Image (cartoon, rainbow, N blue to C red; front, side, top):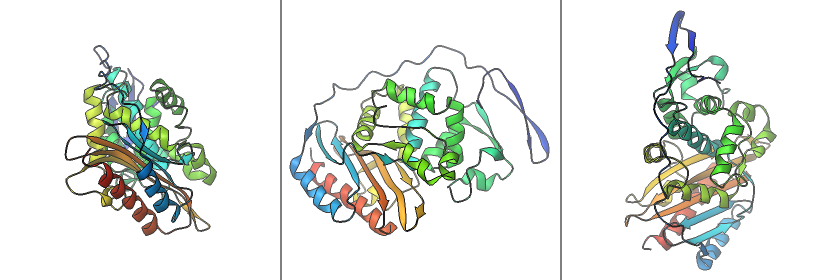
Amino acid sequence: MKSVLFILAVFFLNGCDRVITVEPVTGKSVPAVAASQTPVPKRVDSELENELRVLVQAVEPEAGVGALHIESGDAVYLNRDGQFPMMSVYKLPIAMAALRLVDERKISLDQEIIVTKEDFVRPGFHSPIRNVNPGGTVMQLNELLRFSISESDGTASDVILDAAGGPHTIQAYLDSIGVGEGIKVVNSEKEISQDWETQYRNWATPEATIELLRRIQTREAKLSEMTTQRLLTLMTDSETGRRRLRAGLPKEAELAHKTGTGGTKDGITGATNDVGIITLPNGRHIAIAVYIKNSKADMWARENLMSKVAELVYRRWSEK
């Protein structure tokens, strides 16, 4: 575990000894913020669901879609229980579990964590940290979270995963907030990069994804207000997926989101995903998720489909 407390770590960086002291985190745990509202019972918007079915199935029969107008409870799902490889979407629950540890004072946002060459994901997997620091580096958890969520850096996510205690800790957190049956974090990105089939072991259903997003927005994810706001800011500042959900929304709608993209093998792309929370101009919110699995379509077609889904959902619910 990279962030073990009360240790003195010596790291050799650029030919010099670099000494990093990891200080103990003091003080009491920060309590999770109380839910902002009583959950509204979900009810299917059949008309919108039918429109989405016609749109999606004409392009990607294996796509999974979920959307929920959080304040009204209106919802739509396509393949709601389908198991879709998350790829980088899984960085979101990993970050959430790490932020819960911040609230519990088991780790701090300004804690320095060593990143070695052995931590790097392989070339072909996105990692600005690896590209800029070929010999390794030392970074605060807060910055690693920014790289992981806002820039979708695979190395950052793996280091956070390790610092948080590994996949079993992430899964325990997901279980604790009631979404563990539908979201599975099993492997590191490095492991996923080594074997095509491993991506399918780290999956989520559209329904569980929408519930995860709803819990973030309604403050039912066992995070404090400070860590919730930090997470939402990182998601809003995301640099990825501008032609996905974002492209289907007007400028006045804010999107806090996380994308995920798999590799292509034998003409098939394993995953193309985007999930997030739309803040409407009237202050209300839509949780939305689009997963595309095992696609033969080109990137333009996949991303265009996502933007059309977002456009339809927004048009239907923007005035609610």
